[in-house]
Image 1 (spheres, one colour):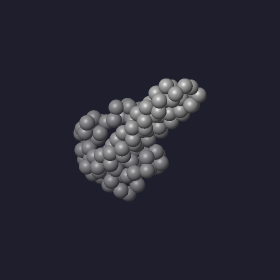
Image 2 (image 1 turned 90 degrees about the horizontal axis):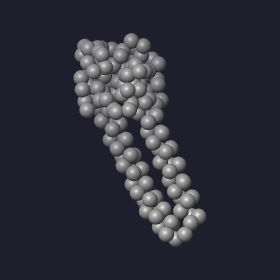
Image 3 (image 1 turned 45 degrees about the vertical axis):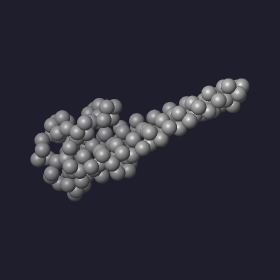
Image 4 (image 1 turned 90 degrees about the vertical axis):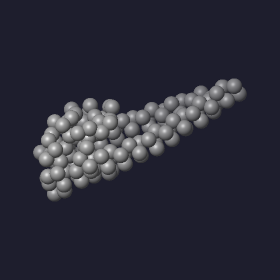
Length: 144
């Protein structure tokens, strides 16, 4: 999962230089994940030359966007199941309740998983490594 900085087309020396924000590139890359889309956008707009920081900022924005879409989809699915199970028979109510329980567990796994991924991404960016998330990395490649 973690790879070198050559995967995004930059050399190792550029990850230790100062960025336009006045921070070390690895620090700025890690901080781009701190507040999700907001900090990613901030560092994406500030950093014009540092590809390491721009790529991490772009992946931060993409990762947050993917999570928002997942949460919205889970919310709509849960609402639809709740509405359907309330208007039917007791068998449908039981099936809807079980599905709601499973959906709640999926929501919990996504929430805890995204928190762990968020911490992992900040640590790896601070270490100067690149972690390519499946959907977010392809979006970050196009943005950076």
